[in-house]
Image 1 (cartoon, rainbow, N blue to C red):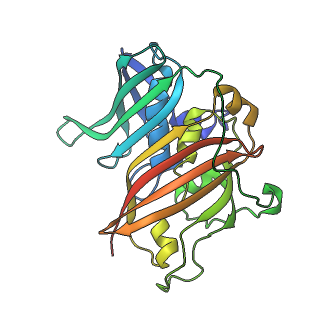
Image 2: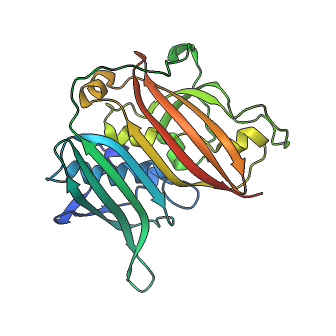
Image 3: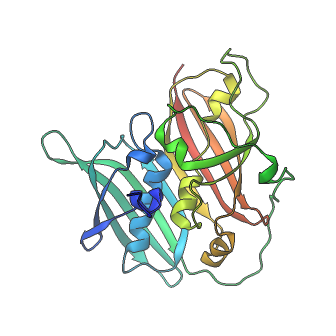
Length: 277
């Protein structure tokens, strides 16, 4: 029988084992090269905050540091609110897995800030670019043997697609734009938004047209949307724009903006990524 639970909700399923401690299980549908897709790992950490009974407000920022790859199987998430102020709450988080001897080892660390949002003066300095509508952009075709997590998202590239040939030719920039959403479509929430912020392939591939090993070391997601704005977005597409800024000494950074179809900026992110020659 086919499960009616969305794959992302299966991946985010956490059971409380003690106050601030949760157990979960890696999901094969979000598997990457040597472990889970980094975006779903970030989403799992945020889910622990969202489930915590002492949470104040909604997510404002999330920083995830990938110390080591998760292996297939169970894991433990620790979520601790280290300080609560009138409007903000500060968190430390960790994911642990047992090593070959059964000892707990930290694979991922994170910090988060939640906040009570209030109506204030608002403005945006980075308007959504003018691009074709989602219906006018073809879905990115996937090889049946593509990594499992790629099948969990509908991606409609606009510009900055993967190089047609891996010939080492240097490009002028590393910017990409695409429409994106969960597959199958799922109402947007903060955890899904955190995962979508990590959807882009490594910018070094586009800049160099050279398929080198690369992986995120640390990512920070800033949430600009309220829960009401996420509800208004529903199952609609997000426009994502990503660009690297500096490639040097085996690391590069990548900045991302995410808008909904109405042109509201929902989140921005920044990450540092290692790459090899």
